[in-house]
Amino acid sequence: MSKAKDVFSTLVSQIEKLSGKQFSDSMNEEKIDIEKVRRYEAKLAAREIAQQRLENHKNFVNSYYQQGILDSKDVFETFVQDNCNHDAFLCAQSFTQSINPTFLSSAKEISSRPSLLLLLGNPGTGKTKLCNCIANKVLNEYWKDVEINNQNEIKRKRQPSVSDTNYDVAEKNSQWERLTSVDLLILDGLCQNSSRLSPFDVQMISELLRVRFSKKLPMVITTPLEANALHMVLGDEIMESIKLYNVFSSVLLGVSRRNGIMINGTFYV
Image (cartoon, rainbow, N blue to C red; front, side, top):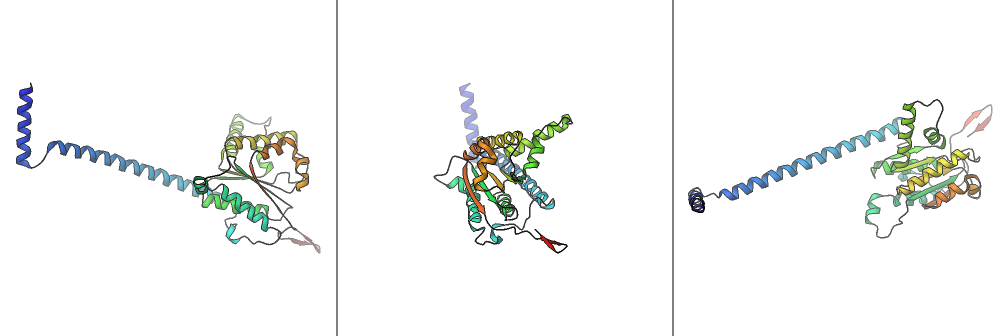
């Protein structure tokens, strides 16, 4: 057998000399080419997946604009500052920077706790406009998803009803799961009427805060409550849940900036 192998090797050697080509190298080159093709195909597939995700995200953002949930013109660069909103503007910018994926990946020392922005101010002082600035930054520059809800909207997604069908229950569970797992949740309007929360509301908001904290996900909360009334209205459970976070907080001062209307000689804002 070994003699036959030697004869075969000699024959291959002679053929290689005459042809000027090594068969073993050729086989290795073919193997390398196949690996290159596979890597190239994997890159193409990854590129197509990334492109599809990008398109889905753009469609999601456009749906927010089309539904009027978010104003695309509300951005930090054009936000009009004055003595009444300057501190809140800087606070909102600092919070947004703290959840910047690039900043988080490069920062040497950052808080291990997720960030939470708490904006206080009377109706019309600009809380929602600042929320829109944050949302547009996160959506269009960080390429992260944002959910903007008020307290009543969140309650509808969590509160059971005797008329709920199996479909309704599944839909509510899905909506609640999104609230607890979306990249950034903005609760724009906690205690909008400045009244005490119901036991169900307290449980719901506390649970939302705790679950998002456990997932290390940031959150924004706006409220017309005054700072000295926060604890009394929200209660221990919600306040302690808020304190778990790396909290940014500020107050928007002044009167309403909303456009008013004249009715029978009286101006309403």
